[in-house]
Length: 434
Image (cartoon, rainbow, N blue to C red; front, side):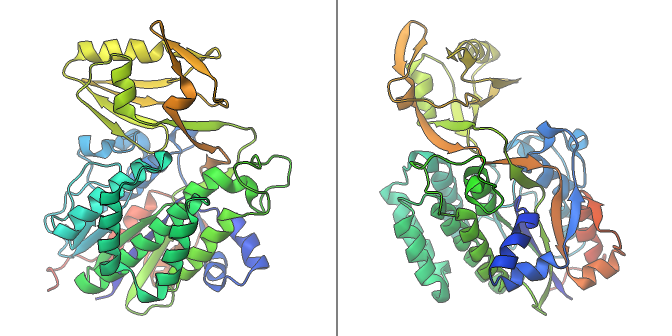
């Protein structure tokens, strides 16, 4: 029985990739571009978030049906995913970092959650360490607080998973990432792919997924530096020099990674982006609280737990709704330069989902008044990025010939949720393969 790998290349703009293929010798990416299909998703901009759209792929439900609108919230809903459907047909399933995916599998070959979703791993010692490391490193990336313990974990895991042919690239990314911060994301994608390749070869699941996010991260932060930009808008020179193109670096990494997946007779392949990104039209600064718990304590907010999410978001849990309501009022009242700092606050049962929405430049001497106490706002937040890329509903899809044939795909455009059916059609109902 053929195996299936689903490579989730989050938000990569293949219209832009085509331009790089014309300029550079990127044979793998060019192979995909020559046979690329398009996917369509939601038509409301607020629904164009990867954690919403990837869940639609996993469940076959649109946003209004699955009702999960925040990263990490999938654990609170009982939506069935194709991971369970494939397993129930008698096949083995492995999952690495798929966004907003919940581990409801009975016996996964491997399961390493994304860094923001609090679901269980496959239970193995190695997967548990990987999960802790990824959560810590990703959620503290803006603060540059990795910690000695995490470096030790990372070194230990690299000795297990890093492939020899990639040693030089690991060293390059690691030692240059302190100044060229986007290379942290490239390091992580390289690492996740090496983990996936080794686990896939060892465990041999029938269906395996891998989520890679460096390209999406780099587009959000550095798309102004790509060849998509006509020069009418740019990143400040103190952030990145105009002649540096991080997106090109991401594509060169993905070109290398695709060597592991294209023209392989041992498995079939799906590559999808979910959404894509296009250039923004104005300058917006993104910030993240340096220390969420410390900030909340300093302004006398009573809370039980705080969970940082991607970029500007965090989830707060409380003992009761009274504490929640007091917190809501305090956060909602924080104003700077006539704008709310926390402009989006979702009220839930004994919890709040908060987004730091202030998007103007914060300078070193900027002060903010919170309940008659003055704070240096610059010291409270970490600069994340200047927004370069914005979400766009069209996505890109590559299916090998076998998958096209069995699904009778003749159109160049399909609905994103159809990928759920395409995966399930690959696996006929039968007894579990030993």
